[in-house]
Length: 384
Image (cartoon, rainbow, N blue to C red; front, side):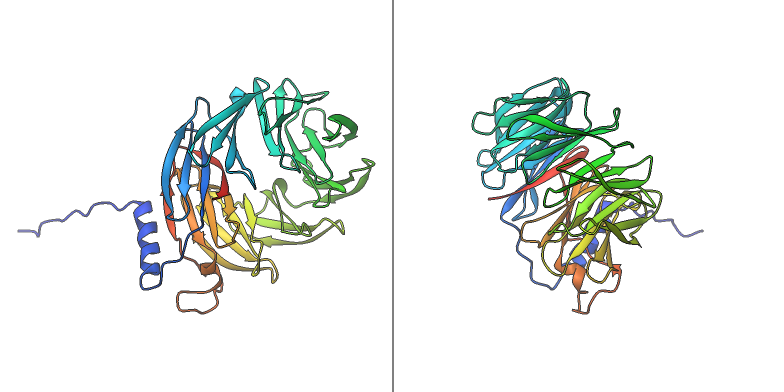
């Protein structure tokens, strides 16, 4: 008689990841967390998940009446702001009660929002109507409007109290003064302005074009073209280092990161960074690491910024789409859109192996995975 067949239960990928993390952590003192919360916009679940970063667990789900897409934390107040674009609504969430405290609406369809350089107001870009709207934080009521000649697609705020507002349809960049709430000039980009960012000092506007595969740098004061740099990729993501001296660019066309020196207006080099690199984050203290999300392979590729070498690869959840760093630069939080969780990486583990030896582009451990909700798309960290 043949021997009986024993069927073993299938082990989920989440179980394997958590098991590996637990095994690597075994025998070592447990690191301390960060005193704060991570607020996660769950677009699919119409909620904001609140992760307690001292214990790395989900503290609460805050329901909303519309799908959120962006979260901004105030650097000095215990509040975060959440934007639901399709409803045109901004929600204020109080960190003490972990509930919606106020809300504002200045149009029917919003695109994006940012805190003003002085942190005293939100500026929200609306397509319907086409305007950049100021919402002072004291009242949280719409105030001044910068009316735009055409619906815009994204914007950035500079340190010199200016806004750069890009319209894909008109191939133009509007530069506006936040102090006077008025348009100062319109720059004819000549190409589709797929991405727009101010240089760290606000003196130049950097525009990436996906169709043309180029980076164009404009002078903020005059609007004149400084240089147009061809790229080997269609730029989709920009990431500056802490002092703004290096710009990292990823996009379709190559499994690589393009490194640009914006002040000297030149491309430094292109470095392989895993399969289909996407979102990025750079640590603010030495050793300086560039963390690059690889959504197609469910991983994070880590590069040493100073040596330009790859140092580690971390397997996370499904489709990592955003990377955040805690203010103390001890932890990296990765939003995994498909698996609905946040992967936590200890920055220290990227430098050395468990036995203390320097890491040489080998797999680094994942600290933990935290389920947060359906389709997390944006997050912000608030110290408490």
